[in-house]
Image (cartoon, rainbow, N blue to C red):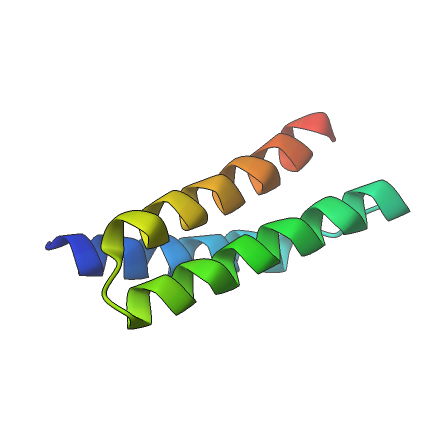
Length: 72
């Protein structure tokens, strides 16, 4: 798997995990929105060939979502 494929896989995994999470309050919704924006940034940078920035963005998105899940 090359770097691009790795980021694409991470984006797919984020979207799968996101579909399973349902925020309970406004603060959680704000954090989910932030995570979604980071995943969109990852796609933006991936399309432009900036793999490192895309990788950073999607991992930040994962971190936000993972933190919310652990708080449940």
